[in-house]
Structure formats: structure tokens, C-alpha cells
Image (cartoon, rainbow, N blue to C red):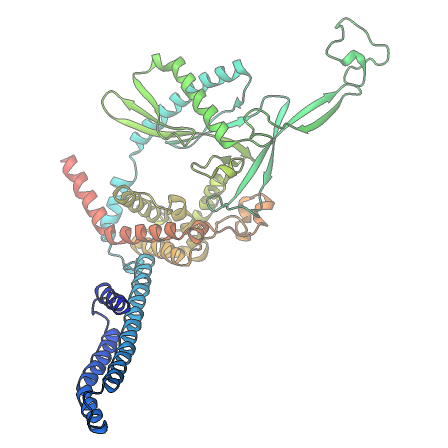
Amino acid sequence: MQETLLRVFVVGLGLLMCPRDDPGVEEWDDIVNKDMQRHEEKLPREEEKLDQEMPPTSENETSEKSIAEWERDYLWYIWNTFSVISMIRFCWKYLNRNSQTTQVAASPVTCAADKVELPDIGTLHDFYAKYVQESSQKKWRKDEFLEGFANDLLDAMRTICGRNGSMVIEDFQMLSACNIIVPLTPPKPFSFHIQLCNHKGRDFSNMPVCGQIKLLENKKTQDCHCQNSDADEDMVCLLHSDHNENIRTEITEVCDGFLCSKNTPFLSKSLVSRWFQSTIKQAWRLISHKYEFELNIHYIDAPGALVIRFKSGKKITFSMNPVVTFNNDAYFFITPLSSSDLDTFWRLSLTSYEDHLLEHLSKRLPENACHIQALEIARFLHKRQTAMTGSSALKDFHFKTALMHLLLTTDPRQWNANCVDSRLRDLLSFIERSLEKKVLKHILIGNPLTEVIELPVELIRAKPVNLFHPLVVHNCMYRNAMTHFQEMLRNAYMMVDDYCHTRRALSS
């Protein structure tokens, strides 16, 4: 009896969990129902046949027991068969649903980039000129204000560093109106030594090119008592007349040095971030009386992400990032939210070299070429989509990299001003293909075509770097990036059109 109830429960569970929506499963149900129906029709005939074959002893208890056992055994086989079929159906439906869910998540409904709906060429030109490009006067005022404020703030920071003998703050560079880099160097007799990393044994998915910064000390050894620090200044040495003779310089690693990771000579990103933020706060307290606005740290995980808030309610968000220069035009910077075991690994930026390459490629293009328009409109669409649905692994520099790949491989004549819509679709299509393949090669590293910009030899000869490697390692990041890009394509026409209408309404 208990076994029968258990089988009934299993059959009922299978029927409840798996609705009849699979034709293949329905065929199994039909087979089972037909077998049951044939069995019910056949059972009376079998009983009549047994009655005929059995001797006229209807009250014989042995015969009745045999018939009951036969019927019970037959039903046992039927119930087990039906239970097994129900369990198979349940498992099949469960696996099939999981498979469908995974496929839908990994491959959303696509909108082909080469067929994306865009406004006409005239609207795109007008949109770029009026709404994407900042007016030269407005941009000049913003640059002038930030440059003056950054200079004042960094002077106060240098005063604080001079008092406590910490890092030396070099002259800052404005990469853009909102991006300022601040090179750091150690005080004498210390120096930095750069070690590029080969990525073996570690996950550098968010740092395609990185390195470690080792703190060294230049120690001078004395071979004569007269050169010791304790020697009398008025003492005259008869052994040699030149105090610089026999002075040897020994370079040693500084383990547990200032801002270095514990028990290592390598500069720690987390310690530098905390020190830099603390110095900014101290410097602001020194100069805040001169300004009628507030200065706050905008993002605690980024060392120099700052926001200025005016009394009128307006604000300016900008960054002052501490960096360590490498080969003049490149620098190492801090990547927010990197794992703690990568605290001594700094990301290498080759932005200056990339700008040199883009400038070199632009010289081959027709007058008033549309490549910058295509890039800036694509970045605008990406920025607007990010504002609507949040950030993703897709970043601005991916669009810039894709553009330079196109400029290296296409006929320069195709970039005339009247082709902005076609080249914008080409740019979006290149990103689309790269996302699908999870491959977007760094434009400089391991690319011999870029030797014209005099990139360091060790970077030209290095193995190519995949900027989309994080999408290979993290599937959830890949799905998010694909969804973000597809939504951007679907909303492209609407975002440009709505933005134009909104701006016209505000200006009228």
C-alpha cells in the first residue's frame, strides 16, 4: 500500500511540474493511456478465459489467490512504467527549460548593427555640431577654471608633502577638461624601478597591461673616516684631497618602504590611494577659504575622483589621479575595485601613444573627415544608454580602439564628410563582431603596424593583448555587455531624436 501511494505521489508530481506543452511528451502520454485502455478492455476477456480453463470450482481459494496475485503483479509493472515515464518527462522538461534560459540570456534578441536605424546625414551633422561638441567658449572657460584650481590645490599638497618628507608631486597634466594626472616620484635618495608583468599564474582580466613599481634606495658607501657623517667638518684628510673620491653608490631594494606593500619593496595602490586622498583633504583645508564652493571626494575607491558643488546647485565632476610615469608618454595608474592580491600591480596607460597614432592616421584622411564624428556619436549613444540602464564592461576606449582598427584597414577615401552614417554603422558593427567573438585586440601592443609612433620596443614585440578578455573569464559580464550594446542599438534613433527635441525646446 505504501509503495502504491509513493508511486501515485511521484506520478502526480511529474504531472504538476511538467504541463502538457511538449508534443514529444504528449506522445508518451498517449502511449501510456492506450496501454491502460487496452489493459482494461483485455482484463475481462482474460478473466472469462481463465474461468473457462479453470475447473468448476469457483469457490477454490487457491485459484482466487493466484488471479489476485497476477493482477497485482500486472498493475505493479504498469505503475512502475508510468512512474519512470513521468520522472523522465520531469527531468527532460527541467533540463530543456534550463537550456532555453541559458540560450536566451546569452543570446538576446539581436538588432544588427549594420542595419541600425539612424537619422539622416544632415541631422547627424547638426546633432554633432550642436549637441556633442562643446562650444569652444564653454570648453575654454571650463579648462581655464580647472587648471587654475588644480594648480592651487597641488601647490598646497606640495607644501604638506614637503613638511612630512613623503612623495614628491610633479607638474600635473590635463589629458582632458575633466581628467588630470599627477605624476609622483620618491624623494632623494630613492627612485622607482618599473617591472612589466607577463600575466603568468594570475588573473589580470581587468588589466591588459600592467607592472609593478619597485622602490629603490641609492646608498653611498664611505671608504674613509673623513667622509663619515660623524666626522668633524674642519678636519683635513691627508690621504686624498677630493672628497668625492672612493665614494661608491649601491642600489638596494627598500622592503616595507613608504607606501609599499607589507614585506615587499613594491608600491601599494591601496596605500597610495589613502595617502593621496588624505593629502587632498589637508590641502583643501588650507585653501578652502579662498573659494565659495564645496570640494568632495566623489568616489571613495578612486584616489582622486572629485566633485565641485557650487551654491547655485551646479557641479563639476573631475579626476586628479596619482600616476607613475613610464618612458615619458606612458604612465601607470590605479584601477578601482581591483582584487586585494593584485594590490602591487598597476595598470599601464598608453593613451598618449594612442592619441599620437590617431593623429598620424588622421593625416591620411580627406579634409573634414567624419571619423571623429562617428566616434563621438557612438560614445554619446553609449553614455546615454549607461545613464538609462547602468554601466557595463563596454567602455569609451573600446570604441576608440575599434575606430583605429578601422582606420588601419579601410580606404581613407571612405571617411569623407558625407559618409558619417555608413562609417558609424561600420564602427558599431566592428564592436558587435568583437563582442560576439569576445576579442578586441589592443591597437598598439604586439602590432608592428604602429611602429610609426615610436612605441617602446618591448611593447611592440609583446604578445597581442585582448581588451575583451574579462568577457571570456566572466560570463555574467559578457551577457551584461551584450544586453547593453543591443539596447543601445535599439534606442539609437530615439536617443538622438529625443535629445535634439529636448535641446530645441530648452533653447526656444
